[in-house]
Length: 182
Image (cartoon, rainbow, N blue to C red; front, side, top):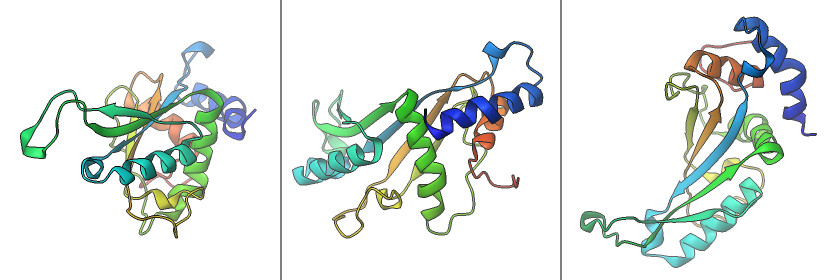
């Protein structure tokens, strides 16, 4: 069992039950999945950029990403229908907890000028999204090998019914939110 899954069962669940005043154990918020996505606007001009992004995202997530194609042609962006415009990976269960552990304990502290995550980036249903400017904050990526930096969006999908319970759960996992010093 991964370290964060064990942490959830031993520390986070009892704390959430007490903090949110939940009677039924099945209604305690939990992590459902983590979705990592990359927009690849530069891939239209340079095919090697797509290959490098696939390699990096595979190393970061531990599984091969899905290539997303444009659904419509947009002439202003020089995008045609069917062009490869993005990558995404959906992590669940053990891989999700392993990635969450590496993100919170290794990657986020390596971000330059980091002052904390915005606690207002919830979507209203307890799901949290954050963006990273470059992939080099992950220890799996060799900074000397990077030709171009590539940002990514990371979304934490939870079973929480509102933002407050989602925030409470992620805070107990150790997410470094602004203004919340434990």
